[in-house]
Image 1 (cartoon, rainbow, N blue to C red):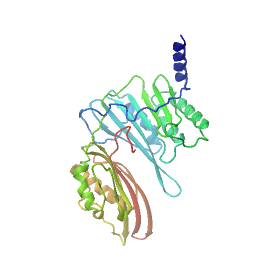
Image 2 (cartoon, helix red, strand yellow):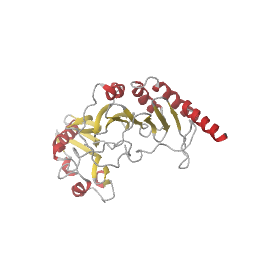
Image 3 (cartoon, rainbow, N blue to C red):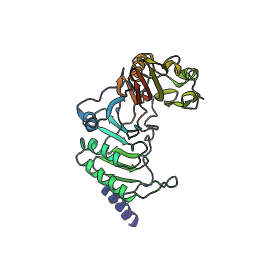
Image 4 (spheres, one colour):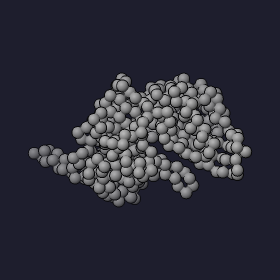
Length: 342
């Protein structure tokens, strides 16, 4: 009798938002990528304007986020949104949101990580509340209240030992929500699921084993396998990939630009002597041209190029007519949903 009563109390607490989970939900959920190819499509597309996908992302896009459908398969499709927050020193802190929809255009899962280097949850609530309210009336008000209450309760917390991270969670008729400062907000729909999550990237990326020799030729120190982060001492730069097996899924690297009298003094070939061979021949030329355009003008970019997500964060300084000094943080492709690094 006591056991049954205790179980009932716990269920009631969870339904009213007072439950405190000891462990966060696994990222990614168990088994979702343990499958063979299921009509994988890694060609990025604009988010459809109608339906759940359009409704979810519309508030974010109106607020200046870039959103795209980044991959799909027979069971579902993954959406990815991103915005760059800049401080007074022009340092970029990125924020992303991820959504997984089933083949009937229903939201199955979502993740709103915290703003980079800013663990408090206000940015999470600002992004998540309008997006979820667009498809689930009332969900946004509830999550704002839950996150605000959590942050008020833990404002004075200091980082503790592993496993001591405070967490909260609640449920409504649509989904289960779990929040902590490390992971942000993870949303799992109650009546919708996707068994096989899309993992494709073959449209735009090659394999790490085929690219590593060209990286070495450009001055990068790469010890692959297993290293997924290469460094370049000459430029204080790095080349980081996320992988599925040997297949490259996403790439991040930095590169400078020095233009004097209208001429580029730091050609791309210094670091990539054989070109961007980590990209497929289908997308290599248009993506390279997009990067070079930013390097000539000192401007950033967030969009889809030849079916490939390209993000370019620029820090530049015009020194005079025809002169430019700039540095660019470049992302090509998007990591698999619910995986790190973002």
